[in-house]
Length: 220
Image (cartoon, rainbow, N blue to C red; front, top):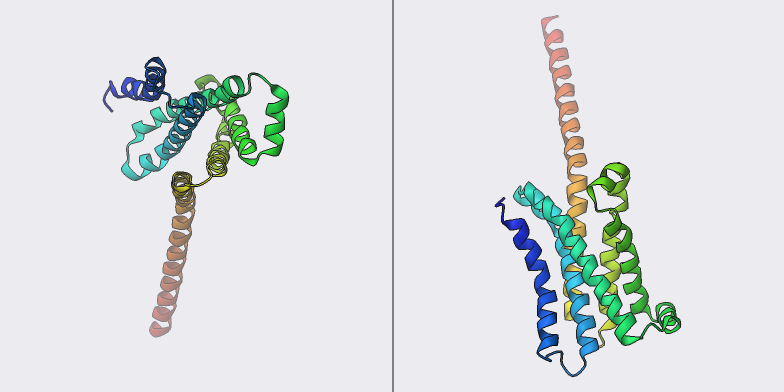
């Protein structure tokens, strides 16, 4: 991979934040700026989360092993925008009214799903350092499977949030389904290949044994 690609990906992940800042500076946050900021940060959190999940399938399909370097960065930026999304809701929308926030989480399904997604992403962000990967060992991979549940909760959050046009959340849901399906295929493929290989070997051994037996019978 080109040495400048990683800084380029980092800067690309900051473009939505820069765009949001520019819109705020120019007064172009629509008639409802709080809703605009909330939806903008939430959309980019979901886009980057799905992008991080797409790294492994692309790496295995295309053979670009260097792509793995960008998965952690994309995941951390997804958490960053998800945190901004929640902070906008907590600070600008509810003005630190924690009682109202808890009530929303308990009574509104789309808030419950969104909060669940954020909570699931917290341990993933905390354990994304190289030292934590070494410390957790195999448990790190088990823990980071939570990312699929976080993504599913985020898609549900978006789906339940919209009231009329559900095309975008459905599209995100289809992307997530494809990514989950590819993970199952890649995890099952080696076992299936080994099974077929062992069956072929057993078949050859049986055929050889029969041929040897027939040869001995003909000689006798």
